[in-house]
Figure 1 (spheres, rainbow, N blue to C red):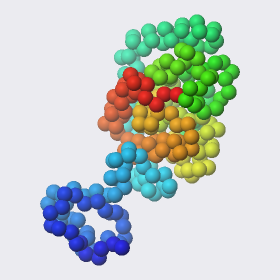
Figure 2: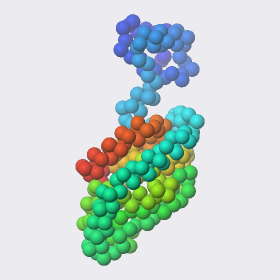
Figure 3: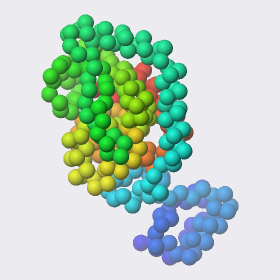
Figure 4: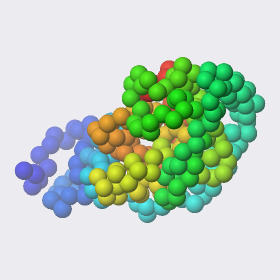
Length: 264
């Protein structure tokens, strides 16, 4: 039962409350205001959960409080410019890696070097995503599992180091993807998820990314519960989207590539 009047000691280190509750009385509002003016940190309880988990709840859209629902046009434009500059700057290094990878794939089984597949992208548009082939040709298209026997020897290495994602630089240059953003989903998978989470398609308000908040914190999702957690990470990113968060993901991506975290 909520307290009708504040019954706390004067000395408090911080306050956690539901700042949107209609049960927050005038006395509580005055108390919170006074403590704020005294320098005591006040947190909305949902923000505490988000800070601790890096995720937001997806039970209802209103829980996310996503503001105007539209990322800043300036942010979108500048992010695309930074994406292109980073790709150009890394080209001498990544080009060598791509050539070596292509040769290794070809030598292993003589099959195709690239794997092209339709995915759901920005604003729900379907596009063709490019990757280095890491599985046997004509392998069944189902979710990847740990120790999946469809993955080739070269494929295991390039998936662990995320080298298989490098051809997606082409998608970034074409404006279909960004370096940082939610993972581009399979079309059929996206349709099924939309049935479970009515506002799932809002995830497409930003461009999909080669790496993202869910990828560096969780890795690949292989089941319903892991998928739910992944979506919570995605919506956290959309809610808190910023250059500082993109930069954090960029450095965590480097760590992921070096350690193979979350690879399947």
